[in-house]
Length: 121
Image (cartoon, rainbow, N blue to C red; front, side, top):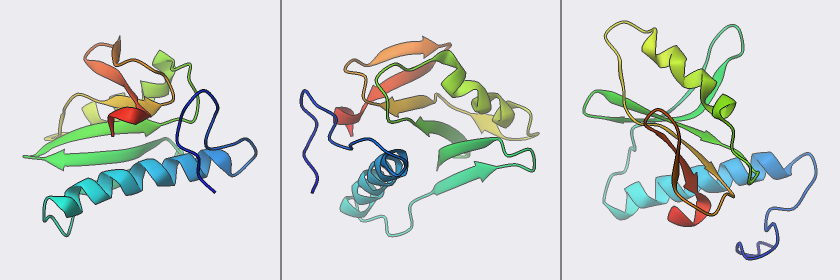
C-alpha cells in the first residue's frame, strides 16, 4: 500500500525501501514521456567497472542530464559526485543534474545541480 507523501515517509524503512523509491521515481518520469506520446523515452542508467553509478541519465538534444535518486530528506553535495564522470567522456555534454529526494524545497546544491523534491515530478 502506498501512502502519498505527507508528514511521514510513504516509502517506509528497510532494505527494499530505497529500491522501491527509485523505481517509483523512474516510473513517474517514464509516465510523463508516455503522456507526451513518446513511447521510447531517452532514459539511461550508468555504471562503470569501478561500480560508480548514476541512477538516471536523460538525453535531450545530445545533452545528458544526470539524476540521482535518494530516499532521504538531507541531500548532500556528495550525492552528485558521480555526475563528474560524464564530464570525462569526450564529445559528451552534461546538462544540469539533480538529486530527487524527500527534501521539501527546490534548491541549488552544487554548481548548477539542484535538489528536486519528489512532489515536483
